[in-house]
Amino acid sequence: MIGRIVEVATDGVHLSTDRGFMKLSREREPLGQVALDDIAALVVHGHGATFSANLAARLAARGAPMIICGSNHAPVAFLLPIDGHFEQGLRIQAQAEASKPVHKRLWRDLVKAKITAQADALDVAGERPGALRSLARQVRSGDPDNIEARAARRYWPLMMGQAFKRDRGRGGTNAFLNYGYMVLRAATARSILAAGLHPSLSIHHKSRGEALRLADDLMEPFRPFVDLAARRLAAEGREALDRDAKAALAAVTTMDLQGPQGASPLQTCLDRLALSLAQVYLGERKKLEFPGSPLPLSATAS
View 1 (cartoon, rainbow, N blue to C red):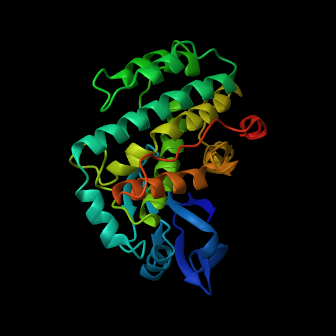
View 2: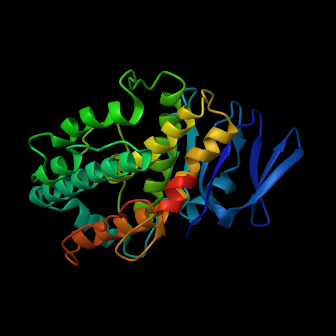
């Protein structure tokens, strides 16, 4: 299902349910409502916001994650459903028992897909990707040569300019990236849960305190499309992460990408990637299903 990434940024708002809708109110005065079935993920950004346990349960029943953000626009808490698929137990067991060589091969393929997507994004931006496509072909199992980092050193100056420095505490383009990655992470977590996998059992990322390590793995090939949206906002002279900027970044999940099954929105491509990972763990297929480059019209509009 392609739903909406719904953000609540109004201070002091209360969120509850009412006959199939999420209702927003403040001091008992209604502010608006959104159909629960239309919500792919709920991002709570407003200070002092409160929500009912019934709303959390209804969203969980639909597989929609709920994300609480801090002042730097990064998520500080995720509320995720614990029951996402009829084969969840079988799939998580297969995921937990996957061998190290399988994970090293999967990481190789994810890094290749990420570098190829970086080259595609640079093409769309009118920049020459140079050696990126050649680097993608050099990635070996487990990426022991750290080709991912070598590609990043070439990619960022081309995508954001020589003066750009990634700093999660800064505003402007960095805030755009923080928000865009947060949306992408939520969308990826949703796909992982829908595929019956556990978001903490990763392929490569190993941070002890991170609960969504598998989301961090699978979202890698999709990050460049967030980068592209952030670059466009910066090129338009925008510096504030306002409502329009957030809408442009959230729209990345609906960007149409080419793929083996034809053109599909990015969220659908995430669903297929997560499902293909579950099938690899179960021995039902050998390779992950990756999307291709953005369609020209989608790339222009996003």
